[in-house]
Image 1 (spheres, rainbow, N blue to C red):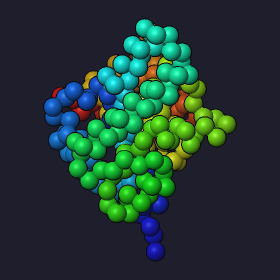
Image 2: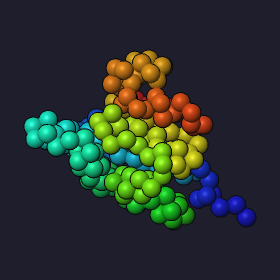
Image 3: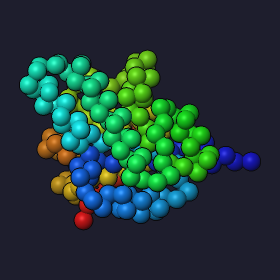
Length: 194
């Protein structure tokens, strides 16, 4: 007997640029309905919450290591924000807890601080600098979880189809193209802010 909650997940990163959009809750719920039957794992973007940490770093010279972990704490806050605006979701600390959510029919939102802490023991964990944002974190989750697909929900259409170009213009972070280059994951960008 097959256990669908063991199927590879579809990782969906909700861009932080969407957080100030009043229609985010309804649009995100509508989008998630199109993925019914898939094991969806939501990843929160950083948006204005992570930008505050950038400003603190610029003002107080916190350093990239300290700023990295503070920004991950900001993502944990954003995960709880998404849980509030999207019914039938639950913030989880890891992939095993995500499987429990899928089994119960709810959608997990990954606490990226907890994930990154656990990922530190892997030799290929992400760097601790501003070149790594929630785009690369979502790609890292997709790689570790052996996801079937990574979907980046953004506010604007991609200005190019070339990942390197998208990293150079800041549409995705600079580390993202390298991360997905060798990954066997389908990556899709969807602009849901219309």
